[in-house]
Image (cartoon, rainbow, N blue to C red; front, side, top):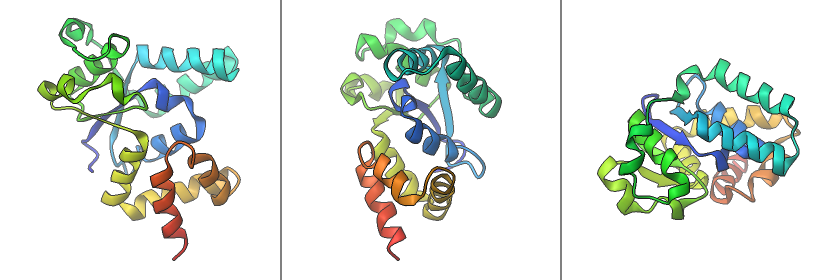
Length: 183
């Protein structure tokens, strides 16, 4: 994976704080991919964080301002004209339209059923689970991934705690990291 690899992160993968942190760390220099999202994706993320997780408006505003400050190039606009051409699940057509408009290679989502392969093929986009995506990044640049995840773990309660949190959402990735830690 190179820094030119554009990847749309769906709202559902940005809601989980530990997963979001891991994904965004891997998009910082040395960058393994360029994250992309739209205002609609970020609005969906903040709505979920406020209504289901219990974050305050102040907390979500701070998160979004940090995302803008550190990933200014991630924001995709001007994709609405593509919406009628999207053949995936209606709820997530905005995600595919943003990906197509940005020239993204991949959409990372937990909602794979909303992005059937036949709806993505003409755009040359694939949909991957966060687990599959992180495993791929690890395969492409294991030292970088391991270093950044170890740094995240050191800042947030230790490696075992982070792996325990990640085990629910990205179990194959945790297995790879566990093998690396066992060396």
